Amino acid sequence: MGKDVIIALDFPSAAETFRFLDLFQDEKPFVKIGMELFYAEGPSIVREIKKRGHKIFLDLKLHDIPNTVKGGMQSLRNLGVDMTNVHAAGTIDMMKAAIEGLTRSDGTRPLLIAVTQLTSTSQERMEKEILIEKPLNEVVLQYAKNAHTAGLDGVVCSPLEAGMIHEGVGKDFVTVTPGIRFADDAKGDQVRVTTPAKAKEIGSDYIVVGRSITKAADPVAAYRRAVEEFVTV
Ligand code: C5P
Image 1 (cartoon, rainbow, N blue to C red):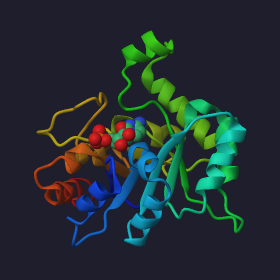
Image 2 (tube, rainbow, N blue to C red):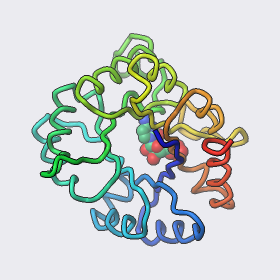
Image 3 (cartoon, rainbow, N blue to C red):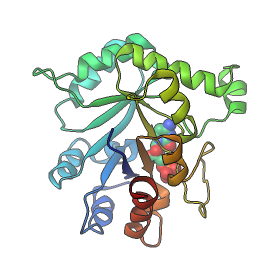
Image 4 (cartoon, rainbow, N blue to C red):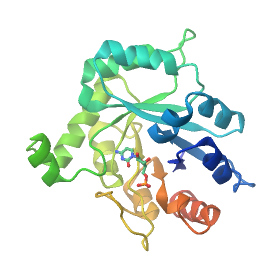
């Protein structure tokens, strides 16, 4: 699995997104388009960023009844994205329906991964608010196994869980890990975080980095630092 750094383009408009992407003259980072940008600009933003030569992870985290998720994926499958996702909490049937919807007539499809528990969720909140009383690690591993059973390619999880998932589900099962901060950054709303270097050590395949790059004084330098820590060293 090719290790890479994915930049989360959490911007409210195409104009701000392109101002940011224009900073990158020498490289074409793998980028993530999430709900903020997609809901503001629609599918055209995906096509425009693709045209500029970036790989795209479309992070819309679908979660609905299987038939609706299948239809949603049918609408997304010809956008040319490289990776997209659903919530594993939607059940194995929902994830199977997502694969069906995403598969093009020639049999190809983008990578499909499942969100386990969001990296902003803590053990305490999971117990008190959503009444899941098992240890968070056990919940994450079970969701990852469900995703594997449904035929998905991997999961979005905390970098702290990547090793456990590779061990429990398989080395080739892709782990995409947000919740990344440089050693000297603030955590913000994230709870289960670590540095790019530590994520590499634990075995993440892709790290997703948002604010630590987009809000940095020098985003290109911050991106290169993440690549250096996660891919190069
Ligand atoms: O700014 P920050 O690095 O915290 O951004 C992380 C990105 O990863 C956000 O776009 C967020 O939606 C996404 N993400 C996450 N946790 C997940 C799945 C996606 O933080 N479990």
